[in-house]
Figure 1: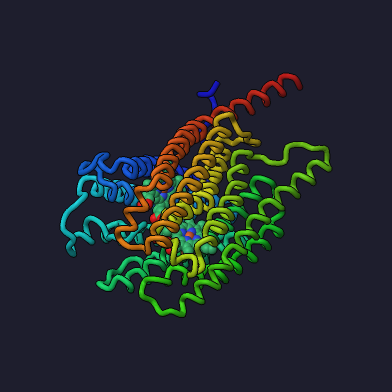
Figure 2: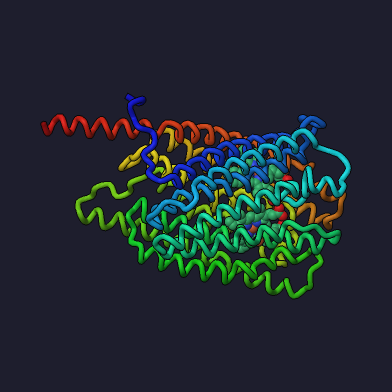
Length: 489
Ligand code: HEM
Ligand code: HEM
Ligand SMILES: [Fe+2]
């Protein structure tokens, strides 16, 4: 019976805290998608919810919820893996729980303020109380400072636990990388009147997060997940990890230059940005090869031994494999498309950018974080081998299909903007609107909305799966175990 299944087999407080973060992450992911749908409808019908819930607000909540749910899932993943990697409990679980509740309350307040105060004069107090106005990092300053405090608690916990516990390569990279990741947030916290200077530092957060520190973070997660799911050899996985770290930082840091082409920074950034950002797909290929290589090798070894099932968490593995493909496609390929200044002068700020933004964020981050949630559930219910259910399969299929569909649609819209607005009509203000009223653009936006709905249905199935797969499979395993015992007796 389902009710007789013990729901929490996790021995460590740290892992339970990880699960708390995962739960909030998935709720915020849902909110993100709903806001995306509203914004997509407004692209088609600009009057939709006008002056009730404007596009500017829907878009802002969409992308801020995106960043916040990913940070939640990242913190959750770290708390989840700490005991496995260091062999011990996190040093201050009570403090970690307090920080969790403070952060969650702050996020709730910020979102409510966004919803209730949508327009008004921009004053010094607005920055403190309502909105700091930096895309993706729009939290007001009081919340900004709160976030720093919460992250300090988190980092203290990770670092002190690391010092006291076993020091694996994965944890060493994790601890060093988290320091850089958290430190970069500070670059998006001060305000200057000069928009070029403001953007210059803002990109340190955005670019050096997604193309350097977050990617390294994903490298550590993939390494951990491959050991957990496939029983991959630690020496091999960690060797890959070090290579990936070297390459990611090698190209990612100066790759920053691809955002400095047109914001008033010196022209030498054209060459630096072009060269280093063009190299960025290389580590992504390495990450792709790494995952598929380990997977294939493990399958081969098991088949040689008689063919038992090697993967002990197929839904997590499906998402990790999707991550390898998605990261390479969304960041590597769609990023490379527009990274040279000769191309970017035409594509800059078109729907092409949005196509890349969607596939990259989804492919590189959403996927592996969902995979970590499945790993968490496996641990929480003490399931030895977790298999994909019908729901898991439909969820991953619809989400991936929807995202790919949205990406293709937006790429077509962007292509039309490049040709008509930029190349043919010279990129004037009038051309901007002309291009958006032509059929290729409008139809593409229609397809994006349709594919967004497919994605959303996939998300609903995902939530249903995350809620039911644990008890269901734990019950099945226990059933088998008891039948086995009965047969033996
Ligand atoms: C997972 C990693 C990545 C993520 C999540 C990501 C995400 C994004 C997002 C959201 C934007 C739009 C920013 C804005 O609102 O202005 C953007 C812009 C851009 N990305 Fe990426 N990106 C990633 C990796 C890459 C890589 C590897 C390259 C190049 C090889 C690249 C090249 C670019 C370029 C050139 C722009 C500027 C587009 C423009 O001028 O409008 N990205 N990226
Ligand atoms: C239901 C599915 C979704 C819909 C309908 C949707 C719709 C939208 C819309 C309408 C915008 C504003 C675009 C603009 O200003 O031109 C947007 C921006 C954005 N969305 Fe989504 N979205 C969805 C899912 C996602 C997912 C799953 C991710 C990432 C994991 C994501 C990441 C982003 C990013 C990074 C931007 C900013 C892009 C840029 O400025 O270039 N969205 N989305
Ligand atoms: Fe970038």
